[in-house]
Length: 123
Image (spheres, rainbow, N blue to C red):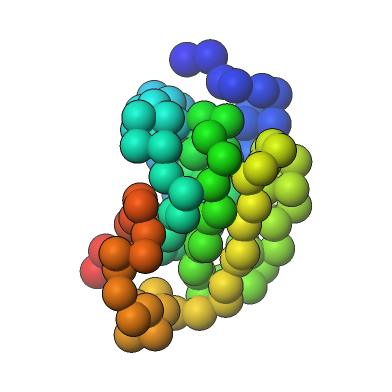
């Protein structure tokens, strides 16, 4: 499967090295297509990992703001570095170090988001 840029292969290698689970490239392409179809202004991602799924959403070139939450500080820092490189004009992001359940308790209404992607441990 063709990736939008070489950085995706770099993220995949980092995922393998750090043993971080990521979606498949075909799943990422589907996520990018979904993002293009929905044209969200605000996206919530629950489970940032190292930023692979968010990078696929950014590859849609749709202008939106991503809020992504994860409890793993080390993974968030890796994600921040990748997302700075994959976000394009009019795309922005905030990464929050917080447990997903706590994040959900803090959200007043989910209707403030146009797209919610649940990508965390589903235990």
